[in-house]
Every structure is written in structure tokens, then in C-alpha cells.
Image 1: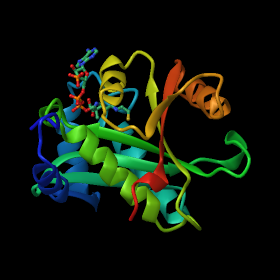
Image 2 (image 1 turned 180 degrees about the horizontal axis):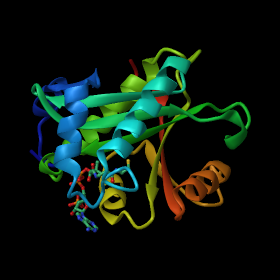
Image 3 (image 1 turned 120 degrees about the vertical axis):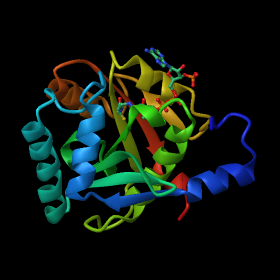
Length: 198
Ligand SMILES: CC(C)(COP(=O)(O)OP(=O)(O)OC[C@H]1O[C@@H](n2cnc3c(N)ncnc32)[C@H](O)[C@@H]1OP(=O)(O)O)[C@@H](O)C(=O)NCCC(=O)NCCS
């Protein structure tokens, strides 16, 4: 399934087959097992303990209302996970709220057109998460400059309402912070969350 050429009805059916669910321990094990040989894996090393610590840190932050980790289930099968994290106001322009979103699809689910639909589901989820007083103005996706596939995937989305935020723009401080945290330059893509009405 690639999004190009899909009718509206097919796209709606495909979108309806996506669920974002709380992660279970067995999901964490399956994700780690599949991703061990993945160049785009999310933790700096591939040790189980590192991955578990990463997951547990996100779950602890969810208790505080700072981040959310959900598995992506497509037609009942585990296809990846997404993250949503609040962005501290000091990194944003005045009077602006944002969450940082991330998408990880297992290798077998890439290249099939699910990326756009999973990102849309993530933005819907981000608009409704508990812990935020109101839906965020922006959903920001951070991609290291050397992650060519993820950048190409974002640029190929047919979303008129999403944009690549240049290094000198309103989110420059956020981009600098994320690049510093990642230890390599990052590109920030932004979506105005309100465009996807609930
Ligand atoms: C990023 C991700 C969600 C994108 O989903 P996807 O299904 O792979 O995306 P698509 O297949 O729709 O798009 C990938 C594009 O990159 C292109 N591509 C593939 N490998 C590439 C490479 N090595 N260099 C450059 N472009 C590449 C593809 O041709 C495609 O472009 P097209 O749509 O113009 O044909 C998925 O790859 C993933 O989960 N990666 C691991 C996690 C990650 O990197 N997340 C990024 C942070 S949000």
C-alpha cells in the first residue's frame, strides 16, 4: 500500500486500521528483536537494557504529563511506535505551544505508504493527550540531517499544511537544542496541529 493513487475511501479504511496503544512488555521485546539490525534504530546502542531504560524513561515521563509512547497497531499487528513529548516554552516563540512527535515503523512496514497515515494518527493523538491544558499549536518532527530516508519521507508527504522549518526561523532555538541533544545537526518539520480537526 503506497498512498499515491489511493482513493479517499481506501485511505479512510487504511487510516481506520491504525490504532495507537499503550506499550506492553511483550511489544517492547518484539520491537527490540526486529530492530536489532536496523540502521535507524532509536537508541545509541542495541542493548536490551538501553532500550528498556529508554522505554521506562518515557513511561515515567507520561506519569508527569511530559511524554507519551504508543505502539502502532495496523490491522491488529505491531508495526512500530510513536512518541509525543511536550516542548518547553523557553524553546518556542512567545505564546506558542508545541509537542515533539516521533515515528518509528518496523522495517517491514516502511515504503508502503503508512508513514503519512501514522503521522496523522499521531497528530490526532497529540491534540487530545491528557496533561496538556489545550491542544498544541504545532507538532514538530525532528530528523537528523543524515537520516536521508526520513527527510525524503517527510518531503514527499502531500500535506500543504506541513513545512520544513529552516534553521533561522521561529523554531531555531528548538532546532539548536535538538541538534545539541542528538550530537548532530537536525532538521525540524512542523505541522499546524489544528489543521487536523478532531
Ligand atoms: C521515517 C519513517 C517513519 C518513514 O516511513 P517510510 O514508510 O520509510 O517512508 P516512505 O517509504 O513513504 O518514504 C521514504 C522515502 O525515502 C526514500 N528513500 C529510501 N531510502 C532512502 C535513502 N537511503 N536515502 C534517501 N531517500 C531514501 C524513498 O524512495 C521514499 O521517497 P519517495 O516517497 O519519494 O519514493 C520510517 O522510515 C522509519 O520508521 N524510520 C526509522 C525511524 C526514523 O528514522 N524516524 C525519523 C524520526 S520521526
